Length: 357
Image 1 (spheres, helix red, strand yellow):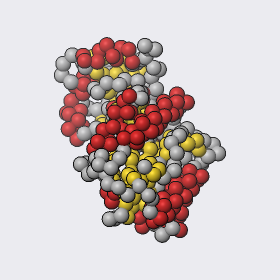
Image 2 (cartoon, helix red, strand yellow):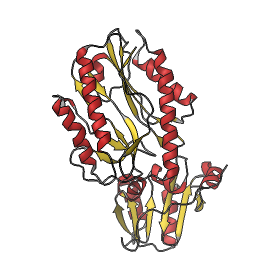
Image 3 (cartoon, helix red, strand yellow):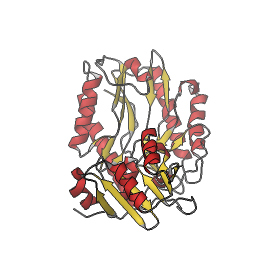
Image 4 (spheres, helix red, strand yellow):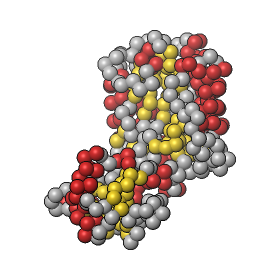
């Protein structure tokens, strides 16, 4: 046990925002600020410091993980304890996370703190999380390697007659064998024409000869996510599939080439989309080119049409263009990368070759 990590203050100027305190309730944001990995904790940030609230189940764990002051709530719930703490200190202007606070929670605090103005605050911690530290990048790199190792081991079990669900289960089993805490999202495995569904759910569909296999998988290791998509084919690869694959691969490489600090997220999307347009597949590209990842599988920035977010060195993102033809199949190629001042570092070591099984 290395002891509690230093508390990361959220990047908010309380005085400038006309706030006396800021309540952080989003689980990933709480973890980012405090290092707490449990399921029930909130942080109240004030100019004089921060207080972490949790319940007795996490008394020992919070003492080991959290560096700021910890208040263990014995009864009544965390929000009543926050309200009592704020009332005792006569907090009159309380910010809360707009995207992580329910209407019911808002109603409760409004009643419990009638003299305190409640002010929604948007994405303060999430924006802070966009640029990763060296330590965070190391964790993402480890998660990526685990993911690729699991893929390499699992594909040896793919053969005619195996089902999508069986393949997904094997992938997730191998992730855990290589050290993952869990999948970072529900593993996508699709066979045949179902590969045209970008977010296909694995089912009982069995693989038949001369069919496409699409696998989109990610592991979560020490809290940090990875993401990768690869395409395989059972049997001889048709020329139409080869052409489609080459077009998507060219688009993915163009997207990677467009990544560097200072460019907009939308310009990366445009670079990939223009390649698919050249091949007559722009109509078949139905999602954005990528997204940020870290403590969550989907984080800003979103690499979509017209997104004006400027990429910064240290952002961890995916590049994943695709093309999907109904009643035929889909191709998507995805890597996890880190933005650098002059380009990007591709973390995913798995070959992008169209694998014939």
